Image 1 (cartoon, rainbow, N blue to C red):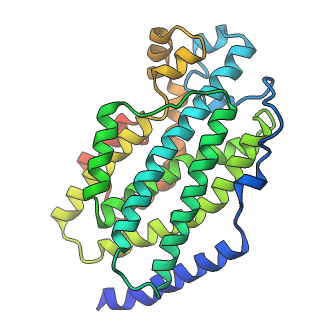
Image 2 (tube, rainbow, N blue to C red):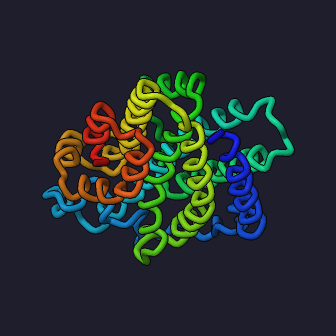
Length: 298
């Protein structure tokens, strides 16, 4: 009975998201200033979000080095976003394959995929304009992602989507309001924040609906899956190559970044609302918490 009653609400949410999308959406090809050359006086992200901010190494760096590092890290975060957005699109397409196309939820799913396609192109062009190479997760993580996008279903898929979107959302809300950040990056962040707010609403609704009637064992398994996926997403955002391309001592940079309590605190505080939702959904188990702690999300 609970599932039957929930469906009209789900359709209503999907219709509201469709209406919102028709009223407020962006075309990055025309909204972002792609023509003006990059001003090296700007950062690529708010410095406080940099993995080395607050360390001894950061204090020794020149302002030019600091700005270059933030640009490389911003491009790396964008590249990780592209990687997961491609996983997201495939999971949603597989989930809605063969379902009723007149259902607003079906139509919203296609709208979200269209958004993500534009976002991925936008991130790719933004990373290139920041003067960064093509950053990618390591081969093991790429192959794990290939497996996940093939087999993930229900709440495991949608809760993982939510984690990736929420972590990026909090960062980018800071970056888009920061005058120190390159204007075109701020525009990219603003577009992503506005449109991803709808995606996160849908992911939350889908997660809750798929969990209705789920037993203890199913929640335990999926909570663990989501936490492992979250760990690999977060730990893939900034890799060693970022430090090398910023002209830093890679071993020292990696060592100080791993010990950086400021950055860990930023990540934990940004995920407070997300963890509250996962807990309310029964997806914050003891085993899952271990992985979130390892990723500095809790």
